[in-house]
Image (cartoon, rainbow, N blue to C red; front, side):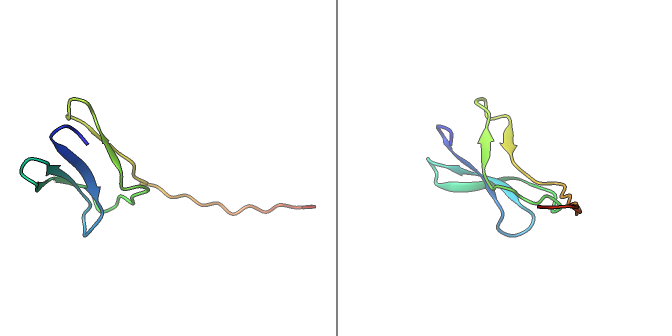
Length: 73
């Protein structure tokens, strides 16, 4: 949240979007969309003090390994 409104990442529909809710006009503006290949770990975001940058969390790679444990006690 900033003084003028609220920035939010929306996972509703495809692709995911970044939106801004203006408190004065009570209108939502779509600021941008993300590549569909991003899997969201968390839908939250943070905005820099000058509102030029948005930081968000996304999972873009999933790796899994199978291990064998011998002589387990």
